[in-house]
Image (cartoon, rainbow, N blue to C red; front, side, top):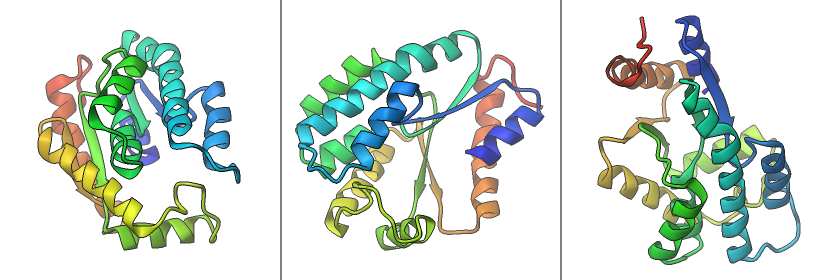
Length: 196
């Protein structure tokens, strides 16, 4: 995301990078509470805390940036709730959709990049990145992460115009080249400011 933001900014585009959870001061506190706690977090509390983070994020960061004509790059959004709390935790799809619609007020991304990697490879990268220290979700078992990945792939299959799969198995530069192959034509078509 940093590489993409730098690339777009170098072409004169106004770019905002953000993340969920943690795209607001409240979100950063919720992120810490959700991911770094040693306390058992009830799955319903987890779902609602992520929704609270998203509601704050949409209303105080995303909508204002979109209104200003900025390009918003967000590390995760509502699909994460479908994958992690829906498939991972087993909440019914109707409940997940209701919570997402309430939190997002219907705001959907125009384009989603799904960085895909086999679960075993992803878990190995996570362990290396954190020097063996894992957050609460990273520490879940292989079956949980498999359900999450399968849910993301199902979203991509259901919404192929919005969700583009990017193989994350290559080098950073190979992955970035694939990202640009998707982003540049998209921005030429959709962005009011375009891209040079």
